[in-house]
Structures are given as C-alpha cells and as structure tokens.
Length: 378
Image (cartoon, rainbow, N blue to C red; front, side, top):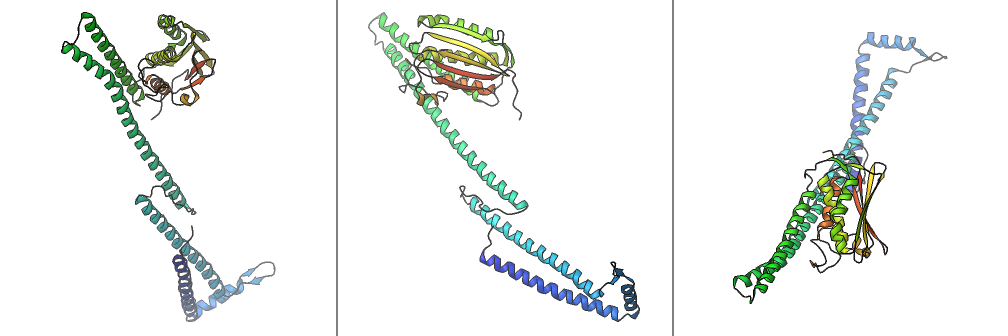
C-alpha cells in the first residue's frame, strides 16, 4: 500500500518527534541516575568495587563504566519504541485506507475492489471484504436471474394455457349459443374442447412435477430398485405406442438384476420422459434401446434411438424448461417443453448427471447415477 504525501510527511514528523522525546528522556534518566549515585558515596564505592571485581573473557577484561552500559540499553529501548510507534502509525494509515475503500464500495460502487495488499492480519480483512463483495454481487445476479426466470415462467405458462383455453371457450361458446347445425358438429366441438382441456391438464401436471423436483426441500423416498426390472417394464409399457410408429423397444442391463438406491417413482418418471421424448422427436426412428451398465460405483443408463439428429446449437438448451427444438410451440410436434427439465431436476435430486449425444446415426440421452444414494449435508 502506498502512502500519500501527507501521510509520509506525518510519519516522518512522528519519527523525528519520537526521537527527540526519547533523547530528552534518556538524558534526564542518565543525569538523575548519575546525580543519585554521586550524592551517595557508599553507593558510588560499591559500584566501583563491583566493576573492579568483574572480569570478562580470557584476557580478564573489565567492564565499562555503568554510564556506557546504561546508554547502550537505553538506545536499544529507544530503537524498539521508535519502530513500534512507526509500525503502529503505519497500521493506522492502512486501516484508514481500508475504511475509505469500504465507504466507497458502500456508496454503490460494487464493481470496485480494495486494490492494495498489506502485511499482517489486515490483509485477511481485505481478502474477506473483497470475497464478501464478490458474494454479494453473485447473490444479486442470481436474484435477478431468478426474477427473470419467474417472469419467463409466467410468460410461457400464460402462452401455453391461453391458446387451448381460448379454443375451449370458443367451442363451448358455439355450443352455448347453439351455433351448430348437426349432431356431428356438436360432437366435433366437444371433442376439440376435450382435447384442448387434456393439453391444459398435461401442462399443469408437468408444471406441478417440475416445481416439485426443483424444490431443494422436496421429499425423496430412497429404496433399493432393480434397474433391470424397471427398464423391462418401461419398455413393455411403451411397446404398443412405439409399434404404431414402427419403432421396436428393447432393454438390456449389465449385470442383470442391477440394484440401485433411488426414488423408484421419480426414476420411473425420468426414464418415461426420455422414452416419450424419443417417440415424439425421433423422426424416422426404427428402435429405442434402453441400456444400463455399471461403472465402478455408478451406473450409466442410455436411452438411444436412430432418429433424426438433434442440431448441435439446440443440444445445450435441451434441458432448459419450456425449450423446444421447434420454435412454433406446436402441440402437434411437441409437448409442454418441461419433460427434459423434469429429467434434469430428478437427476439433480439423485446427485447424478445427464447429457445428450447426437449424430447422424443415433441420439442418446446418457444418465449417470450413483449406485448408493448419499444425502446432502446441510
């Protein structure tokens, strides 16, 4: 830390004044001591006898006079006092600089950091202050992102609810005003309203599930799950829907009867969403394979299809809520846009990871989970 010109002048003045005061004090002590000894002949003779009797070293050197010893000791004390006072004053200047920097940051200059380094414990204070400001800025940025995320959530939900709701109100209004010409028209209107209501129900259910898995305090029911049996059951449950699209379902686990500690209900939802995603978006796919393989203390589960490649610029956004590769938000080509976001949330709850690998030959969603679930420590 560099001192200002005024501080340097003050420090020099402090040193000079301290030296003068110590010099005067030393002279006073020496004069008073000398006067006290000379005014007492017995004490003076005693000191002389002691000096004559004390010899130092192999050459029997006698000690100097007591005045020289006294002066030497006083000089050492003076040097210590001078250094102590200058260091103390310098530390005060450092503290004043730190306080000024803190006031400057407190005035709203959150991009500013205390730029200088000092020695001693005050450097820890500077480091802590800079870290605290960084944490505060990060918290403010996170809060802004949360607010922005909430606004986006409201916008997307409003959009996805308004469209089917408008259709429902429109067709029910036609029925209410008896603006239909035949029984077939009536059934057509009610069927369309029913489909739109089903879409709304699907969105609300997905939104509810998404909010549950994103809550840090969401309950998780951990139990031993036979992953082999789960994947076989999931493949069988989607087999009819897949066969209608000319897609074959298969499941393979190595080793067989692979056990994992997880929430069975949420794990089933995770893989169901990935399979449903493959059925919706795997254009011209001929198969969907569910494979699981143990790797050390983890298990890697892949949901693979040979459908159309996912664009590279879209892969990094797939697990964002309401994101869809197609931008029209059409219900004919996509769902609510929350399926993969729910997958990400469930994976996070199990302290795992999920990624997508897609090329011209196949697309795989790879889920890595620990075999043994370990709760997070608060």
